[in-house]
Length: 161
Image (cartoon, rainbow, N blue to C red):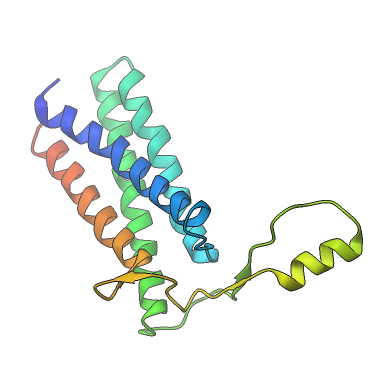
């Protein structure tokens, strides 16, 4: 195993894990509730973490390369969804989903459930809840995911051993 492959494998594991930690931290600590498209961006990262972890335990080198490659594709997919979501937030194009709402808790009487639904925050996909230098969280996900995926692929294909 070469240094390039080892670096690619580490990026494939740590980048989506860090982005997921940031997303969950923003939600649980920062009270930034995710919209439907925010959730869409998370699923490829979950898959990438699993695939990249397999790159550490798979016995054969070709199989290791294949799962790291698949992790890079999953990371790129999240980045592509991030581009689409950022475009919806910046009103470059229309989204394909309705706004969603996050309802905490479950169970209770029908009246309690209805009260939770009615009082739940409405999270719009076309409004950025937070931005830095004019870049939303979806935009940062797009930049970091697409840049990370490109880096992983460059390391993998620049290292044909």
